[in-house]
Image (cartoon, rainbow, N blue to C red; front, side, top):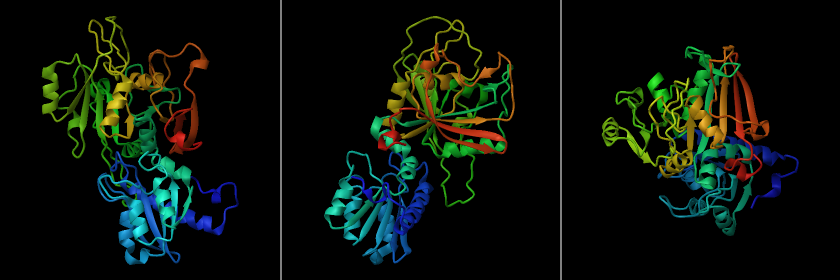
Length: 421
């Protein structure tokens, strides 16, 4: 039910004004980055006589929505004003009353909506309720920007799975480590800090047990925004794919406060190991083992043994964790977006399963070379180019002589279902 006012027509002065206030609502929404899941980030602005008289954003799931904060700030002056909101006001009773009803009661004269909510509980019902109350509604203002802001939520609603971003840092020739395993640092500090910002944008970080054993990473977010009001610094939860429960109980991932650590193990994992991990503070998730072979395979990828890929160490079969079941479980836990920061085999597992939505690649200004050097994506690979994974390039950016490339999986479900973007 899109208002066609701004479709295929010259941009008017009113459009430019609407765009200005919607940009402000988007900025407000970003302040809650990482803190609202499974709800979307939403910002709202109340304008009267060309001035902002109230603004707000949804800060945390279960708490007041953006419209409520903005209308409360505006008070009685909201009567006759215009409300700008990045996502359609809800029309149902959940943990909070319907925002559409609150908008009507406030005496708002006009509502400008960036994106219609695809949630079946809303899906145009909020706009319908507001219009039936005699309030003018305009939709489609900065729709693409509003959709990108909540692409995790859109994917979560439309597919029942979280939005998956694969993150990789490599040399110009696609290597993530030298033939001796040396990898710090291929990219520069600017690129690495951008990677930390990427962490803040996701609900959780996923990695394999190989990375935990070889690097003992903290997997925390060490990025600080220039404007402390632009983003709240979010520490994403951590997911480790560790079929046999080998995560050390003194690993650095347990030392970060204000987050949860989930260890995904297989049904073959010993109960004693599960008990030890739970005592260390982990929430252990047991999945069915899908390994159907006892072959022994060697690997030179020290970052990725015993994870979603069914890689096996010599003489010891390792269980396989099914990616689709992992993603389904993550959705059940309320995660709408997950950043995968594993090594080449973990990345390969998600790529080969087409179980991702976006790839963010950082390329350092160096060439490593050598057939024995570890490539960014291992796995089985393809036989014919026609079988390759097609991507849509979104952006390319130079970061202090490094390169950042952002791509989406071509033809994917999720954010793309809400328009051609």
